[in-house]
Amino acid sequence: MFRWGFRARILVSFLLLIIFALTLLGSYLLWFFYRQNLEDQTAHLVTNAKITERLIVEYMNGPTEKASIDEKIKELSTQINLRITIIDTSGTVLADSWENPASMENHLHRQEIETALTSDYGTAVRYSSTIGQNMLYAAITIKHGHEIIGTVRTATTLGPVEAAYSNIRSTLLAAIFVASLLTILLSISLARKYTTPIEEITAAAKDIADGDLDRRIHVRTGDELEILAHTLNKLTSNLEDKINETSAEAKKLSLILQHMDNAVLLLDRYGRVTTANKRAREIFSITDAMIGKHSIEVIGNSILNQTIHTTITTNQNQFINLKINIDGSKRVFQVFFAPITLSEHAVVGVLSVFHDITTMQEIHERQIDFVANASHELATPLTAIKGFAETLLDGALESPELSVKFVSIIQTEAERMNRLIKALLQLAKLDSQEYRQQIQLEEIALEPILNTVTTELMPQAKQKNITIIFESSSDLTIALTNYDWIKQVIVNLVENAVKYTPNNGKIILKCWQSDTTAFVSIQDNGIGIPYKDLPLIFDRFYRVDKARTRNAGGSGLGLSLVKFIVEMLGGEIRVQSKVNYGTTFTFSQPLAATSKQDLTNS
Ligand code: ADP
Image (cartoon, rainbow, N blue to C red):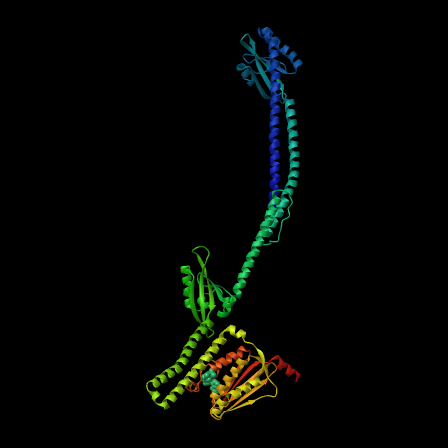
């Protein structure tokens, strides 16, 4: 529609311009030609009228002379080819070269006569029905001295002038017609020249607007259209760059958001969840269907809802610690809320970031427990030492028997404190990641360690008449481990076995290997551990029977150290126990490459 409109507009404009210009020019020329001819003819008629006046003035004096005027005029007319009419002051026609004056009506009120009587001469153009053409009349007065005695009128037909006028007009119309035809052809070709690039630019602009940003315009007109096309190309390429940049940024942000370890929720100003990242969906079990629902429905916590409301109304960041139950387990989150503003005061939503501090909180709580337990464990022997020392000072020293008894209690308690502090120091050491990284792993044969520990603890066992048997296999089991720490593990486990096995008991140590793993077991036939306590015995300061184990000199740290060391060195520990039947601890360590080769060779 536009295409034809534009072309038609060019065509009509050119056409109107040409027609208007030619019409104006032609009309002026026609008018000029006609007027010029009329003036020439009038001058000619006036001159001839003047000549005639000179010739006939003497015949105007008497009636006889007047009667001969008509004859004279008719004679004269044959020579100058004009119509001549003589009229007296009353308007009576005295002579006429074409007609009989007697039959002619009074001419006093003819326009040319009336004008001639008041000025130099008078003219008029009138249609003559006699000859069927327009006639030009010119009249002057006949004067005798200063007295007007009549009028001479000369007339000629305007036929030739009008014929020429009509000829010129036809020529002009033909010229306008030809010029219009040429204009139409010219404007069609011009319109094509100008509209083709415009059409191309328009089509390209439409494609670009529809999203085809790879579209480019190739126009070589060398004028403003080429500049326009070039500018449009540049604009598109800039737009493409900007869109690419923006979508890359958006992608980056979405990637960050999706892979963030923290749960992120975006809420609108009414508290409805609009976006939830992967973590948030996992933690709060958010499905697509839940997006768009209120936070109360999604998270089910009124404190959260209140804080969202506060963030919106105050337009300020908020921080809360949120404790919620998720799938039956207690979780603690530090939640940060930030208002999302478009203009200065218009809050359109809230960003909330959930930082899961459950583990941190647990560690913190465990640390508090640990300090309380450690203080308590230290306070017990310290109170005993202090009490017995005071008793001694208060006079018990006087009695050698009591002195020996109390001092040996003080020694036992001090040893217990010493063991406790040693265990605490070991735990602290192992808690340090730096220290753990320094621990060297070597290929170590386990049988010699078991032998050494058996020998070392034999005196303790003998006190309770406990037998320690080491059932060694024929091959050496070589583990990839650390000598000191693995010996500590075995010592702790055998010491426990001795401690919790009544007199005359039996402890069996075993060592064996599978394809990739070395195993050590310490089995006793002692008091055993109740089933309900089994999952807890590796916890720090946990003791099955506090009074009994404290008497046995236990601190509750031994097994937690054992588990920590075994796992740190790449192994696992398991326990099997039955009350009054005995307990078996089995731990593993990675098998050394040498042992593996031996295994494949054999
Ligand atoms: P403790 O220094 O008190 O022995 P541990 O951490 O070594 O602390 O042991 C934790 C608890 O496990 C002990 O208090 C004891 O009740 C129980 N226990 C450990 N080893 C044995 C065992 N061989 N037989 C029975 N009970 C055991």
